[in-house]
Length: 270
Image (cartoon, rainbow, N blue to C red; front, top):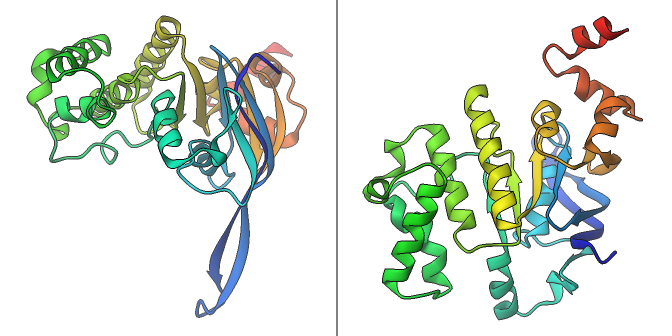
């Protein structure tokens, strides 16, 4: 389909785990089992499931941060696995990631200005003065200030650190951003602020998001389409309102019932 900016076809990924009483045995665990998804340009595709469902493995494999056993990831018509090293490095400018833990993903010994501008330096985009100006603009856009460039990660709250992570991901003006549980470590009130920021930036920069989450409550506020994963497989997918109002699978219904207040609301409406 021509409107897909990123698609994955029949992805498989198997891990070997130690097993048995003394760890002498091994067990094969399929983290991804014939997974296929498609991301339309300018939209948000949410991938939801419990811990261990394979969604974070999918995120890393989509960005070629982990090798696949089989399958292909197509970005703008190119199979990422078949790109040369230099071609893949160039393509990575268009494929960025916002991580789950806004503290662990930031180098504690680097100042914020260097963290956010590191991608510009690596890809040699602009002069040092131009890079600095771009970092300042991006920091201001995510709700921080020029003075924050000289600070270190420990000087910021969790929500502010995630804004830094977003600025770092967007400084290269990517086309696709994979958000791996980007608000799960934040308070509910801060979650809403970060989700609103992501939506605003998506509109301004024509971004396409893959949004990894275990929380369908969060997903409803940002996603256009939803893929539900269970034990490495896609068990359901569709438009967010269809999934939310008329889930086809018991597993999806259980995820929805885990949303605080949803059971009560559903009973009140019957």
